[in-house]
Length: 193
Image 1: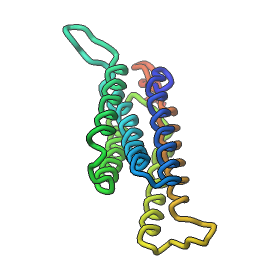
Image 2: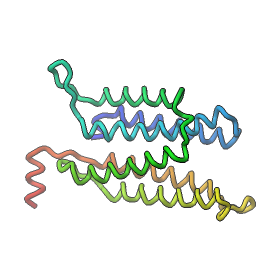
Image 3: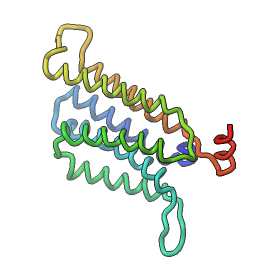
């Protein structure tokens, strides 16, 4: 499904590149502007994935008696919300809001797996994404609390946090790319096996 609507891949890809650039520049310069790019990049990526999930839930919208495929609506809505985060909402407490949104996002996805019966996907990719993110978060907590922090070591907790987050994002994207939606005939054939 994701391959049929490449606008979502472009949105997710742009958001990932934006976040990577913002994070890299913030860590290199420690300036206020790049801190904003770093933080808004996390929201941009979350909003991009969320737009695709909402599209899966509501693939069609009705407007003035006509039915439309909703992909453009959700992509445009995501861009508008991203702009709102960039200009106004980025000052919200990121250490509370973003983890809450991320956990909610995974919960909604796991609920969708049980509710949407006309799709098949490699669920282990989503589970691996979630576990990788939990490990990354654990390392991040150990790093900021100075339990796993050694400035002279080749192993840096914060660097591991970034690498594991990258892996988690990639696994989540692969999960969405693995989805196939079955026609009613295909669904009956799969269920009869």
